[in-house]
Length: 248
Image: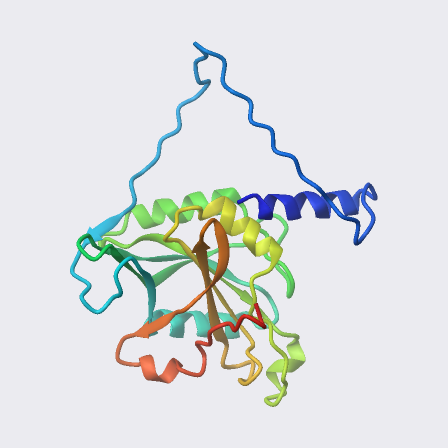
């Protein structure tokens, strides 16, 4: 549960020269009981999960599945290619369908709201997230009349500029970094929220970005399967690739 925070602290200690590389690190958690009669200093509002009751007879019992519409993947591909060697990001919108009897959930990814880079800008190896950008995207989502709700985020890991001209380049940039885990844990903690990464897959040219999907499992962020829906789903079979245990 605390792995993203621990990695963040380790990087800070290394940068401050307070920890040597490869040094073992031990953590101790201390729970402090709240004093009797203490009053919370603030009030936290939580929205219920945006579950839509539905029948999902083709889904396994007690499962969570994710399907992305072909139109969404096509739009992301075009934006990633247009951005070239610069990272881009967006908030994913969709629906969370829940079969109460089968205890199955299907998260459908249908649209995105592009995010502008924060004060730190964006480059080939980073995208600066501004909290205000998330707020604006959520407000925009709340004003929509199609019922779509935030279900995660998407960002790109672009290759170098030369990769776009070298169709046979075997490089690969689609993975979930430690920094990506920090963003996901901070901004998308709900169990149905996912992170979609677009970038160069080893078997495809840079102008055909591929995808991998990541989500929550037992308080850890892990690779999860992604399906493609819509009339053009077959065209994305090469771009949607699962992660093997060795690659993970």
